[in-house]
Amino acid sequence: MDFFDNPFSTTGIAVLLFIIVVLRSALRVLPEWERAVVLRLGRFQAVKGPGIIFLIPIIDTARIVDTRIVTMNVPRQEAITSDNVSVSVDAVVLFKVMDPRDAVVQITDYIQTASLIAQTTLRSVIGQAELDDLLARRDKINQQLQSIIDEQTEAFGVKVTSVEVRDVILPEEMKRALARQAESERERRAKIIAAEGEYQAAEKLVQAAQMIAQQPAALQLRYLQTLAEITGERNTTVVFPIPMELIRPLMDGAQHHLPQTPSKS
Image 1 (cartoon, rainbow, N blue to C red):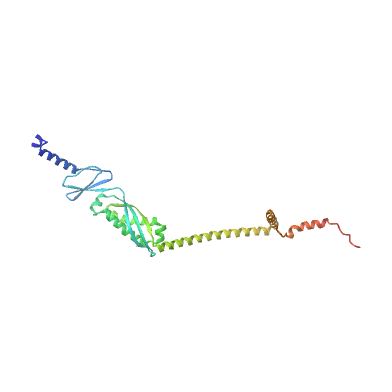
Image 2 (image 1 turned 90 degrees about the vertical axis):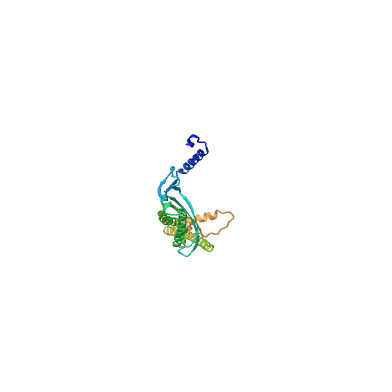
């Protein structure tokens, strides 16, 4: 009764401190993204949170699990593609804990395990892919990685939401080979474009020749147009042959107007 008679005695202060310590260890406040996996005498009891949770001191233990999305960098892996090209690849994995109980009870360290699974899966998938797929169709590689890793982490309550291959490093000789290939491809496209232009120009010339063949007057008009363009230049002397077809009507008209020479009887 000394405590109630004199709560500020040495015994009273000790009792108050003990009560404060017990309450402090028994009451926990968890934010929205945390869950507490409670074990009572070593056996799973419940998943509690968020908010205020109560733990029985000494009897209950709790392991806090973060349920937010975790960004995990996968260390750079060396692999050989299916077409025998040595590459160095790293990636980033996004995942979150969907079942806190399994993440604590089924596995020792779910983050480390997910990292090891991601590393082995990355090497395996890269080894089955070709270099062109790795460079040009990376979305397909990412989806394949996400599916395989998620299937394995599902056993301990982890959901893999995304996997992104971040950087692909090639040997220097392969970089030079790809540069030469790209240059050859650009030259090929340039030649195709030039050939298509020449083909279209040839088609236009054929059409023009056919039109002139059908209408001879068109050739004469073109002839006169070219003559006008040349004579428009100053300080230029041009000897230009004139087709007989153009001057024949003039010559015929002139003959009609010449005086007739009387014939000798």
